[in-house]
Image (cartoon, rainbow, N blue to C red; front, side, top):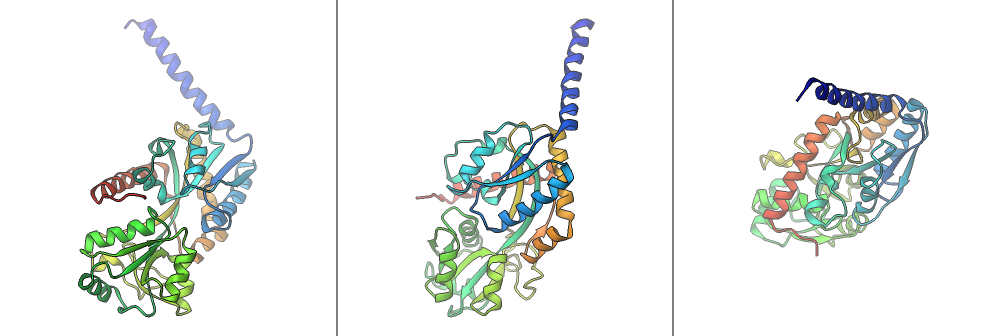
Amino acid sequence: MDSRMKNYLKMILMSFIFCGITLAQDFPNRAIKIVVPFTPGGGSDVITRLMAEKMTGDLGVSVIVENKPGASSIIGTDYVAKSAPDGYTLLITNSAITINPSLFKLPFDTQKLTPVTKIASAPQLLVATTGAPFKNLKEMLAYAKANPEKVSMGTAGAGQLSHLAGELLGKMSGTKYTMVHYKGSGNGVADLISGQIMMSFGTAPGLIPHIKNGKMIPIAVSSAARIPALPQVPSIVELIPGYDLSNWFGIFAPGQTSKPVVDKLFQSISKALASPDISGRLTQDGFDSIGLSPEKFDKSFREELAFWQKFVKENNIKIE
């Protein structure tokens, strides 16, 4: 390659770099939309609206929130995945995004999304009806081993994290459960309280009030560490080494969004998460605020995708 060609290629490369820097400097110059693929009023929806307000003040443009629920969050995710990679359309979603590719035929490639930051995480909480023939994790595992498939376990839906948390527990402990799938967590909680089902996994923020009211028994938490709100409740890992599972919320941009734009978004979101009202709300709802960098989030995101793909395939888990 002669020197003229080398210089020409250098000029092209520099022009791309310059354009990227210029775009990042100009970004944002119009409203940013954050898509929530769930119904209004949920935990992620409330936090997103608080965060959008802070980002509006920081970035100097309107940051609006739009709910696009449906099909296990697939509709909203598809909308963002097919949007322009310019940083003006973002997605906030939960860890289901790492599970769905193994269970559904998706209209988009999950791996092409651009991770911006993991906002917060909360463990799944394993709870039992007050009339259950066990009162703690050790007793529950012993009962389940002695009575295969006699322990009914409610989930928020086939393929949801609460479902796979139960499947993972069974696989790692050598126990078998009868799964009862609901459409969302509300009916499952009601049936657990009334004794129609024996046990259930669910989000800690949603179940803690019922525990404090004596309507259900806390059995264990799915995270590696116990949680401050229920310090007396053990982690599953204390009896089953290697079990560690949490539900998280994170921000994604469409694939091929430039790094300077992603970094600018991450900086603004980090400032919002550091504000006392948002960090306080996350703590109040039982979440740990994280604010993971784009690079670290990308790594953990891809590790989870690979883990669930292998687990679902090896255990022949299907949505019927």
